[in-house]
Length: 109
Length: 172
Image (cartoon, rainbow over the protein chains, first blue to last red):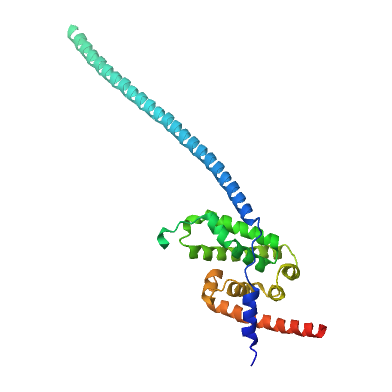
């Protein structure tokens, strides 16, 4: 029978390259590292939640302060407009009074 | 039903630890490094567990990540300037002889002398019994390249086996 090196080699490879058993401690180490990784993730998540809450609180406080400032500015603007209106009314009344006084002076001469 | 399959991490470790460890060991030739690669591979699986759709997908994913991490580890060793091939041959030889049959030890020794790409293709073909198409998908390489690596790897192994046999006969 003719020997076929490739076939023989392939057969040897198949039987020679069986899976090796993993070290007995491998699973324990994997599970331990997994537990550590999850604990770390949990800690990171807690810090992230705290950070996110702080950012939200700072945003709300900042927004409230800004809104307060806007409201006060608007009230100031309204008060200013009211003062201007009052001054315009007073000015108009004084002009009318002045005109009447001038008219009376003319008549008395 | 495949759609109802829920991955159980511990069960996946039980089922595939030998496969992942053997792939890493045959690629790196270093038991310590292989164990580290196997741990990293399973931790990566844990992070991606939600994406695993079936038991077949799990083995494909594990093979792919184990091979890719082994290649990364070999690259890092080369960058560090270690004499990988000498170390690999010595490690493989010594460990194989300690544990395995003479045939397995001989195969391990010869395989360790092959270039990385050919070794990867042959390990997946003969340890995992994958088809060239499955090897191409696992290594993310063109099918023609995988076939060429398989052919060249076998040719080289055959040449080395003949030399080995002649040396043995001379010794006897």
